[in-house]
Length: 148
Image 1 (cartoon, one colour):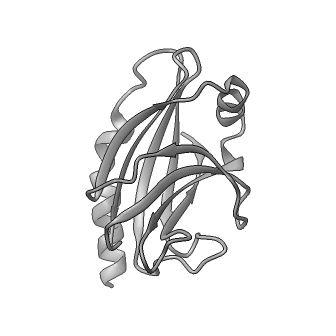
Image 2: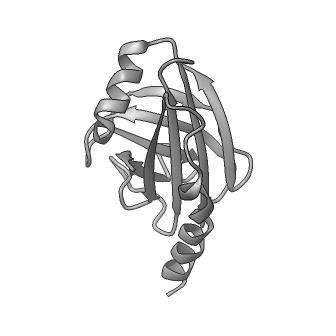
Image 3: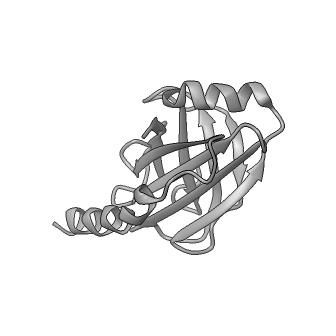
């Protein structure tokens, strides 16, 4: 029951994110619901949940993310987009700063245009995850990216 209530709180807190329109015509918005059970090779944090909205701008070569999570013990040690299908681990392709609080907004420059184009065209090939220490150094929560 506690996990369901936490999920409802996190997802409802993201209502404002989904209603925000892209800043420019060059923006592509991607979404992920993050859970510990999705983490591979696992185990992830069984109570951890979160949601991320990733905005890719191929013109400015920026990837921005807004993320909120709960039931994950800080400190976070990593926050990344990886290349891999559902159920598989994969290499980091975009690295963000590890958040210091239960929500984060940040942007990074990505000079690899082919990566940006593929991220936009094939978001399901990528996932976003959060690493914490010491219990979930390999990944606490994960969510596969999808188009809105």
